[in-house]
Length: 434
Image (cartoon, rainbow, N blue to C red):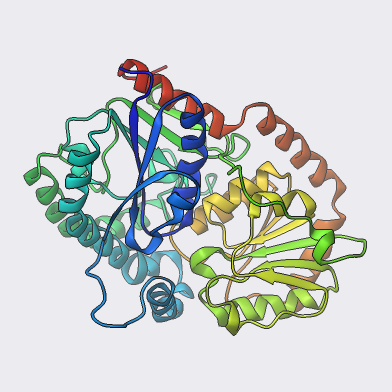
């Protein structure tokens, strides 16, 4: 293949995590002389172009009629409509959140298919890289070599020896695994059969039982810090390449001291691009954290005008997170995999308030391995949360462990490793296995 291969990157449309991960690898690919092109959902129109990439646009839902709000307002409506369900157990959320979300993703894949197929025909990429929790049938059916990248929690890559995805169950306690898997199967079998039939009708391979995505025959990547990763059999590690974490570069410079002068610990609070849309929850957490008096940086999200910060706090709708975290001492997060990876890369202890899907798995893994504390998102006691913040900030042993993990990640950055694997595949088109 030519040294200047065209590589089409297709991030999932739901949130920033897939784009941030692929962007870091695309920057490496571009530095190797290849030409990255991004296919972006209409809600993210202009994002890749702003970072200097060629960009094509597709839609996953019909555009709104007239002046109706789209983008953040649409997601705000979804989050607020489902906030009551986020209070349920993970078993209850299989019915109220997980199954409806898979149905939405299947509909989105079908709606986007004609346009994505046209983009592939127009761009004529030498290689395609996808980061989406659901199948993209236009890619799997294209005949073009492609890479699957997974920036979500790797329990999505099912293993009977590990807890079921979305359960938030610990590795060492199997007591609820079978019941959770049985409920998942009962709720999803019909939907899976319908989506599988659609994918194969478009020329894509059949889906594996109860899995809504395809693995690539060429190269499969997943991003998760090695210090948090799950034990896997040898066959898995031959097929899947783990990237410790993928941290964006090229963000604007940010120094906490420029916005919050003073001394003492700094707390970073982010509930992610979707969690921040539950502004009642975000306001409650802000108010509790303000009681500590610590300098606090808050990622306020697109509905920032609905949130009031306390004294000694600074916030913006969107922050250059990789540049903020190194100045901080504690991360309070919803447990999204993107923020989790960047927090570990910065060596920060964490308080995790999970909302849905893999947030629970990430929160449990952080708690199991002693990197932080999992908190009941809607039922936490404010006094206990304040005490937890102070305990984590004072825990020098935990901080030393995390500093060692941070140094390991710096020696083997995931973005560089992933981008190199993609660039090498573009040059050889030979399936990559260990």
